[in-house]
Amino acid sequence: MMPQFVTIPVGHDAATRHQRAVPVAALRGHDLTVAERSALLDCYANSDRTFLEIATTHGVDRERLQELWFDLFLAPSRR
Image 1: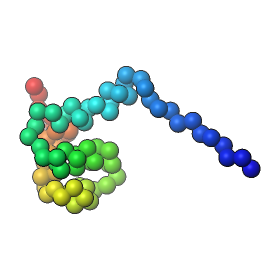
Image 2: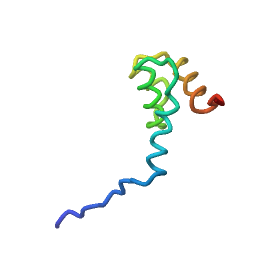
Image 3: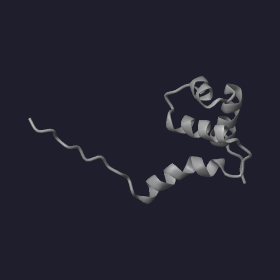
């Protein structure tokens, strides 16, 4: 039996590009370490993982990661 190929939508429309840029834009202008930035992006990309798992992976304090997540993504400051 021949394998069937599946076409995966790539998503080159403007809305998709904008949605992918949102977390990166939210991190701009904040004094974050590389590990904190990586951990926050990991949280955004992997919502099924816990803060503890992600913090341990990136070597960041879990409480700090949760505070950053809340401040930057859940209750962003008005500029």
